Structures are given as structure tokens and as C-alpha cells.
Length: 95
Image (cartoon, rainbow, N blue to C red; front, side):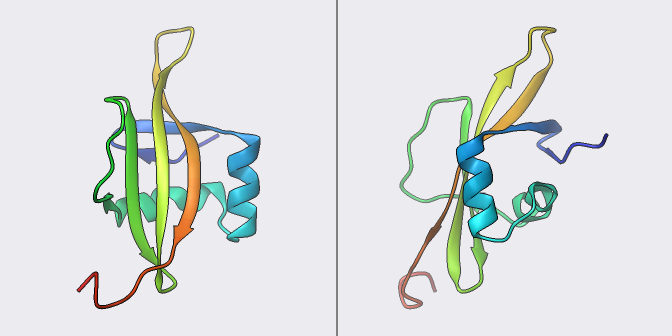
């Protein structure tokens, strides 16, 4: 089975809460790889070192994806999707 990757790490774990959020937005977990390739770091966000917060312009809104770097019991690092959400914005603000 092929897992989507980002920053050379596999996106393995999607929590049940996150899967519901993805389902509401009609996004498949495999589509996260394409979205993360087009993403940029979110402005005004402070997270821990192992937590990445990426934003993507998607359907005239800002899609925020929060990823957490974790280590398996075998010592291999992977990413877990912590949160996915939409943020509405005014076009004048992000020009």
C-alpha cells in the first residue's frame, strides 16, 4: 500500500475526527499529498517543533492542514493529520 508523502515522511495516521472533517470537505486522504505540494506555512501560527501548519487556497477559501510528526515503535518517523479546516477570507487581505 502506498501512503501519501510530504517532506519525505509518510502520512500514515488520520484520526477519526480528521476523517470526518475530510469527508465533510469531500477530500480523500490520498488527495492530501497534492494539496500539501501547493501549500505554504500559515501566517501568525506558533506550534511546537514537530507540528506543521500548512495553508492552501482551495475553492475561494483557505484550507488549513495541521500535521504532527510522530515516531512508531520501530523508530520510523511518520506524519499524523491532526486537523483540517476551512477559513474564509476577504480577497483584499490576501492580495
